[in-house]
Image 1 (cartoon, rainbow, N blue to C red):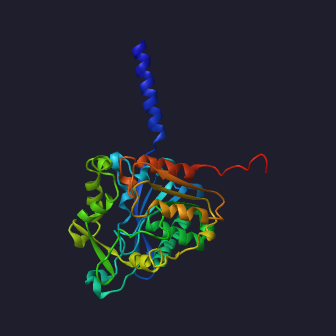
Image 2: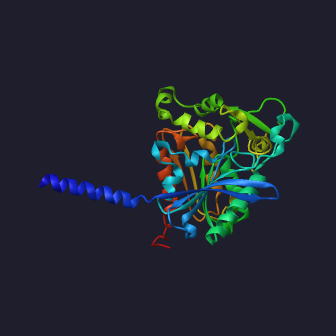
Image 3: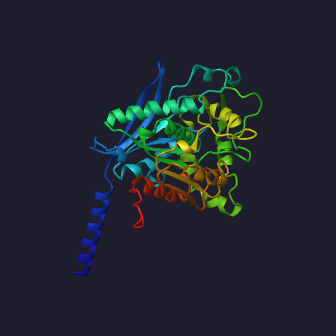
Length: 344
């Protein structure tokens, strides 16, 4: 009898778990941007659901070097996009022009030194705007949530300062701000239109600043190759070993946050939506001092939060402690605004 009750309880628990994890539908979209550019967008949402309110729509924006593959990489069987979509969201990840599966300008097929840096932050914000407008029209919504990673934080923040009515929450994961230490993205010689990155260089940059004792266990077995295989495959010119990345962001780094003295590319006082700053303790791409300096400048955000995560790097999204990031961001996306205190 006890055995039967135990089996019934396990069956019920399994049924409940399945009920709480809806089947997720995936779509690959191409969004027009200008006369001759198509932006690749990955979409995930609960299967069979086509209506979403503004509180259940989110758009991911990638960083300086790689397209948005990390957002939908099924590490351990589940991607970040899956995690968000299972909670009832309509979620999108973008590849900017020149990255991933989006249109690449013809200049990327010529030697890099024959063209100037392209896809600077204001250009990227305009590309993001094309996708936001597409999503809002598609779902008949007034606004949505933005999640930026690394350079993507500058893109999403700049866009939000200029389009506050279209954004209801802003997540800045590993935020870029005024730099007082050297950038890990370096280009030797003339700054051409793009740079070429190898898999080995990607791993070396990832491990920068990680304590020696933590390096062996930081990335679960197979996860780096899973990401690198998916990411480097998006550039057919590299044969899976290298990829090309536009240098607009490098030019912006030299002209703004990495200039001497550094200067802002966007105004934090113009952010008027709830904002989360989140990063990991071993981040050497966007070190913790950047978020610490940026946080008090968000003087017009209705409410804000600064979260520091343990045991991770700039790329904690693909490390053993990734759930710290996913849960922290999800709480911010889902929670109701703070209530006024009884004394007010």
